[in-house]
Amino acid sequence: MCLAIPGKIMKIDGDLAKVDFGDGTAREVNSSLVDVKVGQYVIVHAGFAIEILDEQSAKETLKLWDEILERR
Image (cartoon, rainbow, N blue to C red; front, top):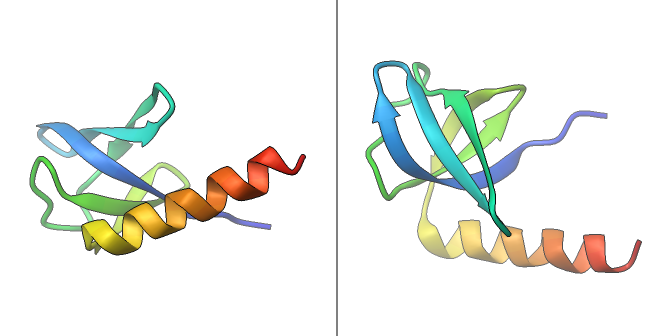
């Protein structure tokens, strides 16, 4: 099973972007597939930002992830 997770772009350096996934989790991802800016939310899959997401949708999805993880 493959998952795509939303995160917020914190910093961009060339094709690499630092993405904050919440709860102190941040990772570098390849952002070459989308024209993204700092502060925007993206969907990340397999280390690549694959789609820009509006803030409301991103926050709703992150809330669902929190609920799923709390049940484990």
